[in-house]
Image (cartoon, rainbow, N blue to C red):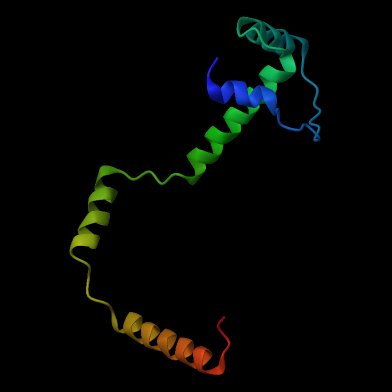
Length: 109
């Protein structure tokens, strides 16, 4: 038994929250069969499987995947950035002016 697994047995997570839902008989039998294959209790199997699916879903939505063309355009812009437009130069000057004014008034902490 690895150290991490042994440690988790000594301090199991507190299970104070509940998640209730109904499923059909066929799905329940499928889940029970899968839990048996892994020699786990159904609840333990469900919690682990749902948590893994949630992590995967979050990772898929938080990851930025670019096509080869987009990746190339991104790196080209980093290496050879375009000259700032007049609007961008004005916006940067306005931002600097506001930040300096806020600093002088002590609005920034």
